[in-house]
Image (cartoon, rainbow, N blue to C red; front, side, top):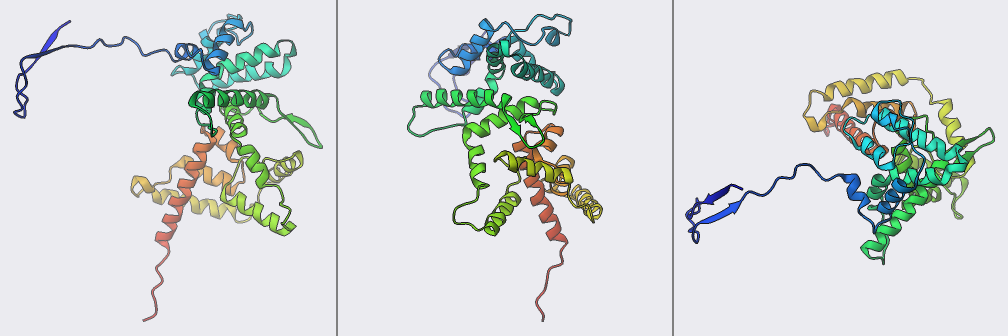
Length: 335
């Protein structure tokens, strides 16, 4: 390898002891494969699940979906993972793969164990990332990581098959006909494993020391402060929520409000970048606050995660308030 000589005197005049040489470090040909790296984590549940899915599962999505051919043979979990992690993997490809997996988990009881393992294997990187956010006191790092992954696995499998029963019908809690199937599935599993779901349910439950009016006022305040995709509670609460959104908000005067919002967005375009309301955030404001659509549904259609959509909407609200405040004339005290 070529050697490079370093001057015996530093550019700033610091004397160096003698002539120094060093060799050029080797440059890696390719980046490490993330799927192989995960498989090699034999001590962690995510690596074990992916390894088992690769070697044991005899089910899978057709290989032709990954290669653009008519090959009907089932693709291994690692092959599917590499396709999903590729730069050209579109939302349509991801949704097609996950709809196929979830539909077979639900409708193929003879092979359900294989499909469950296959689903966990394909979801292993996302599950590993989300599990790292979970924590429990009194555990070592390894124990906490392993327990968090196991807990998230159970929530993930349950979320695929959970149903909601109302007076009218029984339906799957996870609607796979909507876009962004995997992100919604993973997000719901994380909410359950992290305790968010239970926390929301308790928030919406009437306390023993509350009157009906106090309970309703508290629920209204909670929903105004932190809007969510759907309230978490019993089937009756969920049915009431869906009925309210199907009926839609009162549209009287709404056109004028929407037109005014569009004016503010256009005005913000002339301001500094930090104060500009981007079109996607404006659409989030209009559709969730004015049209009454669930945040999760709008976020999915805009190809955003629900947490990202919530943050962007909160930023847009702050920008809008600042813009309105600038246009309100300052009240001067009488002279």
